Amino acid sequence: MRRLHRTFGLQRPPDSRYRAESCAAVDCAAYTMGWITAVDETTNLGRRQGRYIRGSGKAYTARRMRSGLTEFLFDPGQDCWEQHYIRREVFTADQRVHTTGAFWVEDFAEHQDRLAKEIANG
Image (cartoon, rainbow, N blue to C red):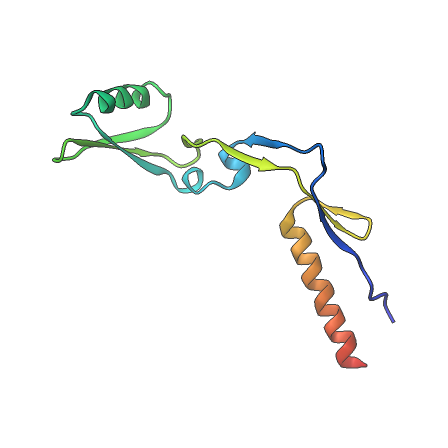
């Protein structure tokens, strides 16, 4: 009979702080699919926003709408305007440390499946 007892854990080290991460690192939808920013360039604020976007160095296509709005369609694969933050977490199974929460969940599910089969087989 295999060893059935395992200890799974999630730890947030006391010294961990939130840290900024890139869109690619956090699987940001805007990074993956691109995004649209609409700006009303009939206002002072909108004109400043338009100048900022045009000078940002990001890849986009601008589309002037009848309403006076300008839609900037940004290409995928570049950081969006949002700053993403993550907190360091440590996922463990016995003495093993998993590199991501997804691997920890998979290991946990496989262990539950083994337990269920052991119980079913007596």
